[in-house]
Amino acid sequence: MRNNRFAINTVVGIVLSLFTFNGVQAAATPETEAVIHSERPAVEVMFVLDTTSSMTGLIAAAKDKIWSIANTLASADPAPEIRMGLVGYRDRGDVYVTVYTPLSSDLDAVYAQLMQFEAVGGGDAPESVNQALAEAVNRPQWSRGDAVYRVIFLVGDAPPKMNYQDDVKYPLSCTKAARKGIVINTIQCGNMSGTRSVWQEIAQRGEGRYFQVAQSGSAVLYDTPYDEPIARLSRTLDDTRIYYGDAAHHEEMESRKETADAIYSEASPAAVAKRTIFNSKSAGAKNFYGSQELVQAVESGEKKLAEIPKEQLPAKLQSMSDKELAAHIAKRGEERKALQAQIDDLAKKRQDYIQAKVVAEKDKGAGSLDSKIYECIQAQAAPKGLQYTEGPAY
Image (cartoon, rainbow, N blue to C red; front, side, top):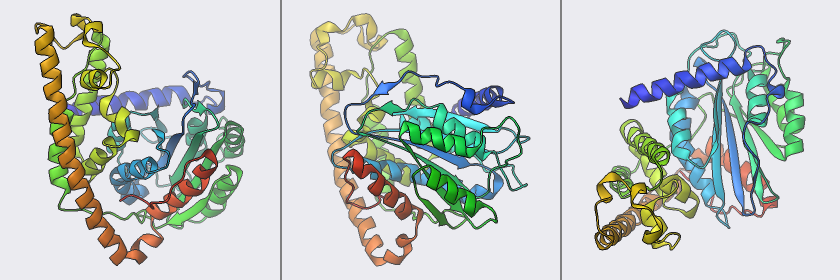
């Protein structure tokens, strides 16, 4: 059922993407979401990822590294709000041209889409880079505010196809990005002829950085003895969540639970462990709680039980007395604290284990994808008041 659900979501995304951009200029597509004004520090990242067959290694690495990147972003002082999104691209004539996933604090949903990407198609070198970049600039709900670090990472190995008459060419997208305060960094995988000069130009026009990595992505991947225990505790911790609200909200949150279940079934223990560690940080609270989570709302004082109509509670709690309900919520809260304490202890041991590896293999990480992305984030987020000093998370 889980795989079928994700397959349906992927097909829907493909159909919508083809419908929206088949013969229509991407720059003419209006921003479909309302503007958000952010008063607190925030990081918003769109990954624009070539998903053709030559990118097999990089896509496999990305499925593991996205939670590492999230943890790197969360390590800033002060801790920012984090939103991510994706544009996967191929070329016209492939199964899809682009698949778009909006910017969201629901990183589970973004990760679920990333898990569906498979490296297929391509083969004729130039790809629909122009269309993918135009989508990344124009479609997301980018926040406004001086404290928001807005960034695009364009990742691929082939140059853009420049002979589509109805395409929006990358110079225009770069100009619009600069106008919106969006930095564009380019990551060239491999050394295909003709890619370097264009990738460098896009980075220059996008006021970002260009760097090159091996075709596989040169990501540093560490498995630890603590990954599986953290993953087991994480599943139990997720089960402590109780949502309240109308029927539509319960359905939305049930979908969130199904997404988490699919991650536990399909992701590696290392990826689940990194997701769990991210969720335990203040920057990951929105990903863990979602919205209108009862235990958090009551314990934080955000809501009083008396303010919540019984019909907005899960069906199995509606027959409880106020005293029984309060006791049930308190019990869940205590369970959550105990689980989180165990996770925190294992997370520290995991970090110590990895740190020893990093020190022993320091040359391995120097030119890695992890280090290059960290260098971009560290330099570009500083003017927004975000200080990164801990190095990349693994």
